[in-house]
Length: 409
Image 1 (spheres, one colour):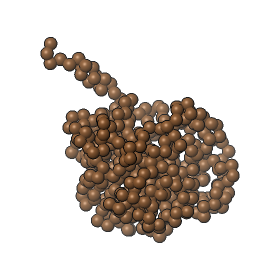
Image 2 (tube, rainbow, N blue to C red):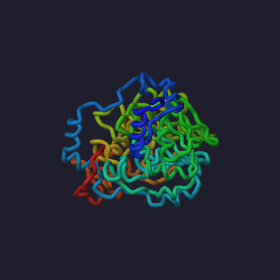
Image 3 (cartoon, rainbow, N blue to C red):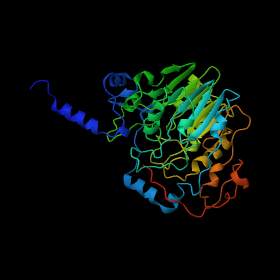
């Protein structure tokens, strides 16, 4: 028989059985556009400089690190994580300066900039996983229900990993009329989940979408992509610059440290605020995630070395257990690195809005109230610890037992 493609029929059947959370592969005109990208080489997107995409070391070596008892106990909080309780009331008042950031946990940030509202990497789900019954589970409650967030002008997605692109959150936002700015290929996932193509702005590095009076530009990052069983690197990852009439902000997404931060700062900075990934790092994946010290260095590069200018908000930590380091280490490391570099940082609790232009930024070491203290005690960074304790003392009460935590995936 002519016109029959048995293999194509099998492929279509397999696609129909694919779990919705896996999203969809780029096809048709979208795939042709991907193939024309200067960042798409030999069938896959490439990092700046061509660094590897995958972790180094064997699965057995990684398993040994994760199973060490003492380290395992410190990878999760031992008491409830402090969450800001007045988020809704705070957001009901407009920002006095025209720029306000609200970190909702992990990499999710609501940016109110020059009269517009931009939501970065929103993850309101209980797990960052394709399945509801397994995978890294949220370590603190959501500060504010998504339905209480109010209108959002744009949702910006950095890449398609589960801790940045959350199926239930996207489906909830798909019914609000907001626009989605995403890297090349990510639109295939969103269309499968109910986002209309007319509400997608799908960008390559260096491309800009205008939403009202905001310019949203996809900029390079050093990372990788993938949600399904076959991750062929045909979906791009990005950091993002959002520029309004008066303010400019930067969101790193996930990235290893690379020289391109200075180039981004020269082309689009200086920034009133940067949101920089400083958690979920490990020796096994140095090219994909930054340490706190590297995050502070990236902030300085973005500001072109102008120490003290602009505010850095540490993101990608505190909400999920995704790496072998202690849960509190990203916060502690960021405070130490910022003090050494002379950088201004904000340390809000999840859900605590702040204005980067304010003279008084949130600076409590709030995580100490929930973390297992190091055996040598907390270091003295010169910042304000919570609960009235001194910087070298454990917070009150001192935790004595750790709850079970979900292994990272």
